[in-house]
Image (cartoon, rainbow, N blue to C red; front, side, top):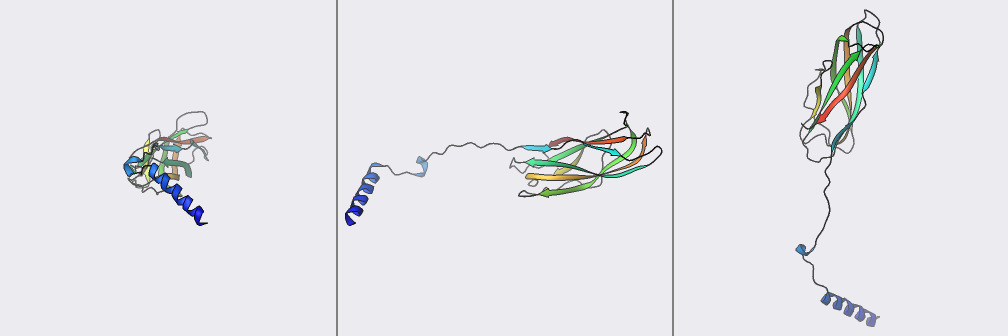
Length: 174
């Protein structure tokens, strides 16, 4: 047993004499840093609003989407929505008031966004409006958002089959 230990120690000493010592500036590590991204996943939310001729429309709608910010910069981001209203025949509708009443959010393993916009917020038809803005150092990771949208008014022209479409207009930096 002692003979085996002596052989092992001698072998280790011989290797140590042959191999140079490593210093911190001798070690090279290679790799790549891949940039994250800022993106959104949503499909246009289309709603058929219940209404008959000469009737006032009032509806509460939910518009879901997912924002992914893996940039790691904490720069913040903003989301804009556009609402359009048409009859079943495709004619533009006027006389409706659309507003964003607020957002519900779900966030697991992420930094919740601190919204910099006050609600309720008017969403004029056919115009892109920033409806959510994550402040700096917030909103990083994957965030599930649901916009609470209210629609009211007396549509003109009056027709059955009134359709409201809410589309994501953009997602951008702050």
